[in-house]
Image (cartoon, rainbow, N blue to C red):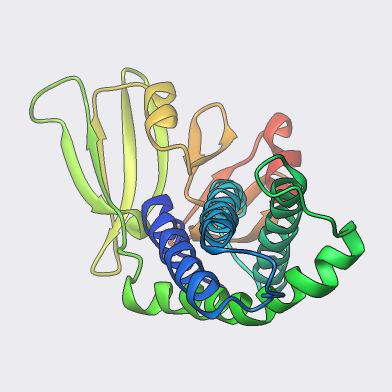
Length: 246
């Protein structure tokens, strides 16, 4: 596993689906019914537990996007950790709700987990796993198209994110190096390197005059030079440590 759909919107839809499904399951199946709760009680439980489920999944959505944006990768360990994080938030939230004034539950935390949470998890977690996996298959991540603009109206370049190799400072211009049909091209645009660094925050600075797309990094040539796709660039000492840590 090396992919994650980082879209907050789509994951919130998954969270909403899980919550609606959980409400229907809890209200109609009543998996831990001991006969002491009436209709109003089950409505409170179903609404409360699944509102907490949605909020817990919403927290997960924000955190996983932050991690994915930082690392640009996903793993089986991160996926398992994400699901466990959701389950922990859900367990704590539902227990607080259960002990609150609306329900005034009598179970201890241990009893609550063994009698209620475990049963809910056995049914809900497979749904979470399936929904997350099919989110990637049914809503594939589209490759980003970058629109790079300069100060002049004719200073514009549209390329795929994967085609951009690096951007270098050229006095009052920047020179953009990119691939087209696997051939190296470049274009001068009147703007500043600092301005493009803010707009294209996935680029890594390796020198005061150079920003690179890390996906085109190939290897080190020597202590102060790196190979990129079809080109090489110098690396200054002040940025070398950052590059080595990536």
